[in-house]
Structures are given as structure tokens and as C-alpha cells.
Image (cartoon, rainbow, N blue to C red; front, top):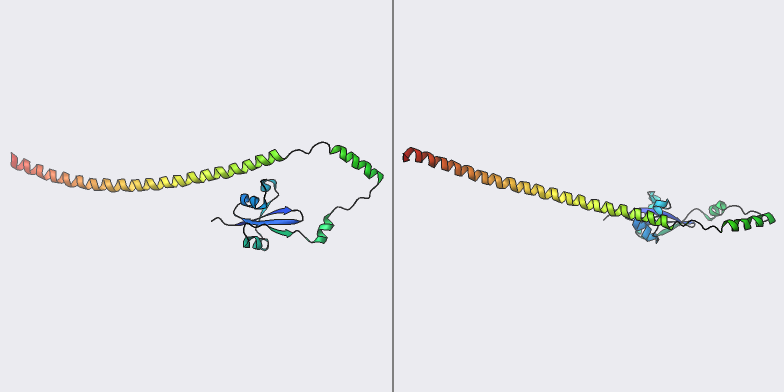
Amino acid sequence: MRALKVFRTPVGFHDAYVAATSQKAALEAWGTNHNLFARGEAELVEDPDLTAEPLAHPGQVIKRLRGTAEQQFAALPADKPRTAAGRVGSSARTERRKVPHPDRGPLDDAEEALAQAGVRHAAALDALAREEEALRTRRREAERARDAELAKLGERADRLREAYERKLEQWRAGGR
């Protein structure tokens, strides 16, 4: 069985950890079909303090709060005072939002296809490497069998040649 690795991705104010055998298995555990690793939104974790709990529960998503509540509130942007000018600016922002946000879906699909192709081709190459090793083993066995059979037949031919030559010599000596 392949070794477990621990992966992490941010989810709101939490980090979601999972112990899985591969990035693909981690994505499945998180319930996404987008390659968060290709986007830089997920990563391998090697810190023993962070990996202990996920490794104790393989395949289960473990959520941990990222920082304290005070740290999270401190990271929020300060409220801007509301003025008439601010309201005018907000309508200008609404105008800008009429342009649709670019669709990342095709890029996500392409990245996923790229990742799947990499996995598929790696598996095909591994299968070919196993076949090559099996053929090398069969070749060594065939060479050993050939060498043994040729040695045995060579010894028999040598014995029969010697016997023939003795009989031929006897025939020449006595047959004339």
C-alpha cells in the first residue's frame, strides 16, 4: 500500500487537512473536482505537529481554526466611513460589475485534464517498465535453457564422434 501523505487547503477561517495516498485522493476527500494543487490553493504538509491527527484518521477531513478569533478580526479591513461621496462611488462600482467575471471553468477543466493525462501516462509507462522486466526475465530463462540443451547435445555429439572415429579406425585397420 502506498504511504499516506497529509495535505492542507484553506476553507474559510479554517484549514482542512486530510491524510491520503495522493493529491487526487485528497481532492476527492475535500469533495472538489478542481485541481487545487495546480492553483496553489492546496499543499503537502510535513510538520509533525500538523500531521499527527490527520494520519490517525486517514481519509477524514480534519478542520483546524486558522489563528484566534482576535487575530482573525484584526486581519479584517477597517470600516470606511459612509459619506455621500462613498455612495456615489458605490454606484460607479455597480456599473463596473456589469462586465461579467471571466469564466475560469475551461482553465480548471484543462488543468484537471492535464493532471489526469500525467497520471494516465505515468501508469502506462510503469506498465511498460514491468513488461520490459518480465521480457528480460523470460529472455534470461530462454538463454539458460538454450545453453543447457546445447551443452547436453554437444556432449552427446562429441561422444558419438569419438565412437565413430574409433570404429572407423578399426574398420580401416582390419577391413582392408
